Image (cartoon, rainbow, N blue to C red):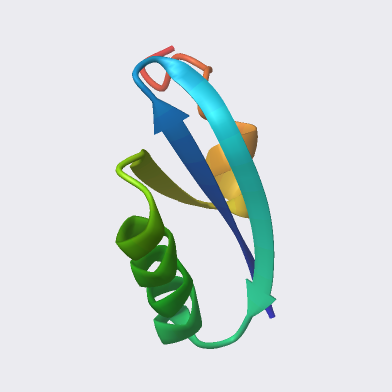
Length: 60
């Protein structure tokens, strides 16, 4: 099972964060489609490893 994090942003401010644990990435995309249909927030999808290392400099 993989863990995915969905973050919602209104401008530059984060207004929502959700964790989804699933084997099928289509479940994540369905949830993102629901969010986009209800709001006009910008959405970012991360897997758990990338989310953990999102602020680190990759080029070191």
